[in-house]
Amino acid sequence: MTEFMARSTSKVGDPYFLWAEDSYNQVASDFRTRLGNIMQTLCLANFCCIVPMNIYRDISTLFPLEEVVPPYALGARVCIAYLNSWQIEHGLKDLKIELIFEKGDLGQGEFTALMAVEGMELPIYKSKNDFAGLQAADLMAWEQSSFVKRELRGKNIPLPNFDWLLNIPHVNLEVTREMLLNLCRVKRINPMTGIRS
Image 1 (tube, rainbow, N blue to C red):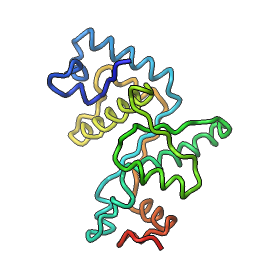
Image 2 (spheres, helix red, strand yellow; image 1 turned 180 degrees about the horizontal axis):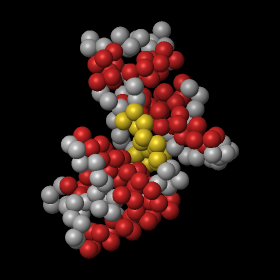
Image 3 (tube, rainbow, N blue to C red; image 1 turned 180 degrees about the vertical axis):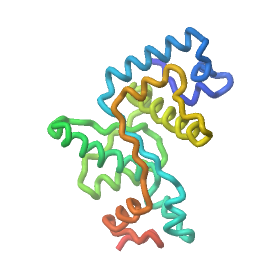
Image 4 (cartoon, rainbow, N blue to C red; image 1 turned 135 degrees about the vertical axis):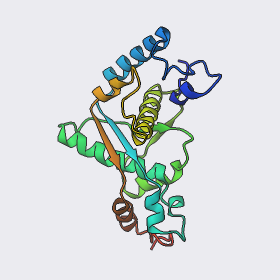
């Protein structure tokens, strides 16, 4: 399978350049429609988490807390907590779910350590070429990020053929300052110094 990255649609020189914007390109439209059908068929739910960087600065301007609790690890952990709740709420708590993340993302070591400390199942890391589900996740994350940026500019309409993302049951989460402080308390991390007690 050829790797497809959503950000490629906005990179000059990439074969998918402008496919996300060009609603009149029939080949692009067909591609997006097929991709949407696959994702709607295979995705039970979509959990997306935004980690605003200002919550770190609100806690401490003297110590870079994001080095001890990286946004990647924090966002992933919040998604997993909601996934666990979602499973219970929908009677799927006995369903075996593998936690697969893209290999090489920044903050993986801290994320794995966070899961180990909590006694939770450790995440599995794979490349996009080895697991197509990561390509779907990348596309959904990219489109949701783009949607938020467009919304901030007053253009909150999904791009053509990507509006099908809204048909997949989704939970949009945002980490708060209190959530970060609570995680630090649970992990016995002093948020002002990063030192574990």
